[in-house]
Length: 407
Image (cartoon, rainbow, N blue to C red; front, side, top):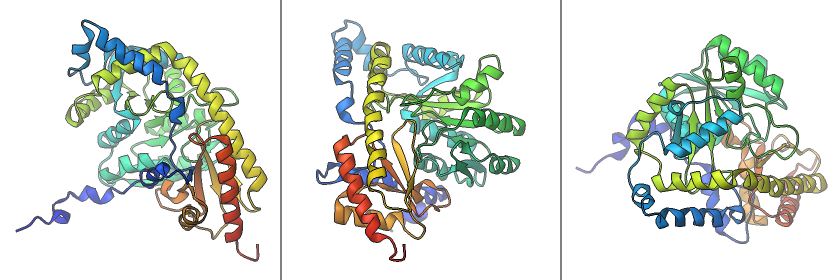
């Protein structure tokens, strides 16, 4: 008798779905496509020389190579965790070594958080829209989502209060240059969110993947930093997820969690069961490069990505038809487009690829309830300014042609 795999799968597998973004990344290898799809760094800006020197140092060392190729502790390479602790201290968070776990990118951190906190039917509060990868990480644990609308300052507080009253297991938030809509939660709103979550006893999961990529305005304190300032410098309410993928290089797969000790201790057990530890040599190399070039490299990225953001905003101002609106992010990698009512981002994508060789991500993917059909996400980080302008021109022409005649 052959195996009926559909019957053999656990029930939670039904909560898994393919990532629209992962599928769209396949298009980037087609040279004729102008891609605004993947929210990825430009490989031209990877610090390849520093990475090569770091690997060379490992293998030239009389004692380092053996250890770099060996198993290591699940918590992560000690010197790298010390660097992360120092980085978090700069953000106002006094995190000890037992409050930091190195993960395989911040995506693994989100998966661990889902496993740690979500049971079947549990409420999870997310914004509307929210990061697709978080929904993918949480959904296999069978939550019920409560979605909170956003305005230009972040989650709408009246809706947040209503959601918190229902006692969700946690609130997930990308406070800086959110993926997908580029919104930054204002300082006043950050304080209000933490006050409300503290009053209801609801943890906050802070995804800080883009926090360093600010192109204008003042840097705002992280939610973890505000939390720590209220509690003697240590995290109590916030699980902070960080990543080197957007600031250094994604392929080394190094991220981290800074969180209360009780949460980290259990995530360490999950790490042991999942993959034992992040690649030892990759952690050593990452420690070397962040210790030597982090600030200077991030400064370079800010200048380059600001130019691309500005190119996209200017092109939209020049070419977008009436009825199309967009966000004006202060940093990050994304501009969020709202199309006229009745237009569908999925249908537009199909036509854009087929007719004008432009790719993007339909916005419905970022809504837990799959609403937002007339929205799309554009990423500017991996496309040169001149290609951005041409891509926006093509896309705007297509949108104009697709508008109802009465408009």
